[in-house]
Image (cartoon, rainbow, N blue to C red; front, side, top):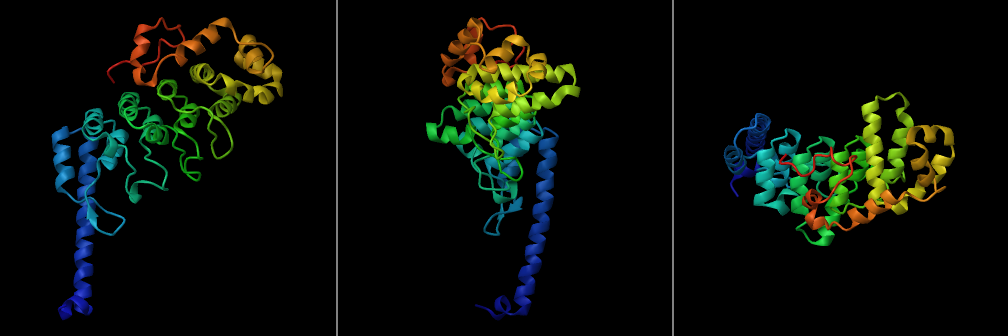
Length: 300
């Protein structure tokens, strides 16, 4: 090995070269960020991604963005065409775990939760279309991913949809097989979390309250057995919950009466729709009015 590669001069030269490379990575990264934000053409973004180094990987080497990392940018900036391209061209790589610089823990890829957080219903639909073609265990890991306990409260995408009142996202997730019985870091299922949100919304607007009630209807359709988990909380303050939910819904959620024939029929109906045909199969069904406003089968 030459002396300048081992001695002080060689070390200083290597350090200076590394600093220059890091500076160039930051410039390239910002340029890519701007390009996705400005919704530039897909071919140009992929050309940039293939030819530039944007960040330092876990081994301390300059690296390009993976399809998974590019999809995160597309989700944040709502670049639907780019997200759709990545999911069509390399779905498994697009939904893989991103590099350490893009996550806070080793939880599975955060793309489903990020689509819910930013309310990207159209892209979420494409993600779920790609997910349903994966093996069952891989599909379950992505749909039922528990977020970081420190940053995301250990909740799933269903918890997030309930917290942020995203009924379209919740319906898509449930229809594709996400598990409504999982608990977050605080020990709450999505249904229990939603009831707490409803209980705190006394000063919220009517539109938000109606969205939360729609979320409740959806959860009960897909998780009728979990309704009994609400019994203790509802019975603890009957007048308030009667006022919030209405008498009929309060009675059967609290376990004081069976659900109506309509609710039971809808539970059977949604259970008969295979995740492989969701949400396309909804177009063939006479949906009740409370589900018709949901934008699930459009082109978003």
